[in-house]
Image 1: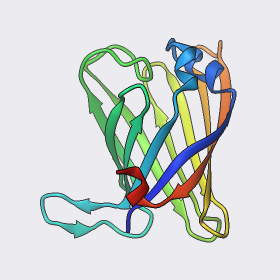
Image 2: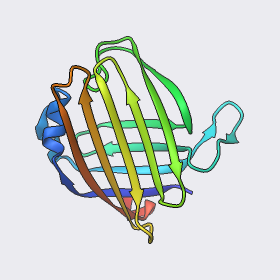
Image 3: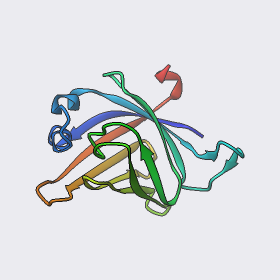
Amino acid sequence: MASGCVQKRKRNVFEYLEAHDMDGNRSTATYVQVWDTTTDEATNTFLGEGAFTVWTVSSTGTKRKLSYPLGEFVEKYEGESNIFGPGPGEVHRKATWDMSSRTHEVTSTSQLGFESTTRTTDESGDWMTCVRRYRKKDGSVDVSCVEHFERTSLKSLS
């Protein structure tokens, strides 16, 4: 079942974006994430507990859909990426899910460095905390940010 979350609070997002050579002023944008369980599109087969597809829409017009299967996988991209580097390229990723702590983590290694994104929900499921950490490959940057999201009705997102 899909779950929608609206970003409510954030800390150090400006610095985090600037570490990726992005405009830190984008940190003032709010965005919504909708999470749903992931299925293999070719076979329509459920990929298991902890595998998710995330749709993100921001107030700046960003719209994207990413799928996170559990385990190690490679994500290919074309063109320039502030997060991953010049393209074409690929990012080596690993996604884990710990049901007991309600924690989903994705680690990414690219030509620019290492990034981890950990999302944890509280016991009620009403709040999600997202902690991101980025370290440049050359060691010149090591920055983290925290965002808090509140669950919302998908009807209110329409």
